[in-house]
Image (cartoon, rainbow, N blue to C red):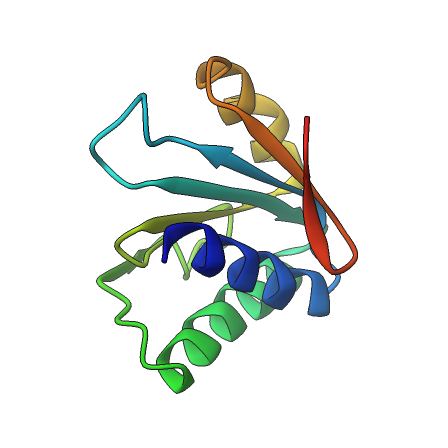
Length: 119
């Protein structure tokens, strides 16, 4: 379920023109979730639009959104979907926090159109 959900989240983010969509496979590194999906938007409004659509589409598919944090500030929105945690950053904040480097041991997939490509 985790990989399918990560792909779903990536597709929803892509439909809102999220940039640099990356999936981290966290199964061997963390008990928080199986996958992280990381992306960014170029404005507060775009970050909120991406986050809102992920939440709405997950609800439509019957996926429980456990928690969403940071929506109002729109700098780093975290959406906890259980097996997947989506991180939607504002571009500057993504460059600052560098989650991909922090979790550098995690296998990465880069979203290219309809699917993730493992790196």
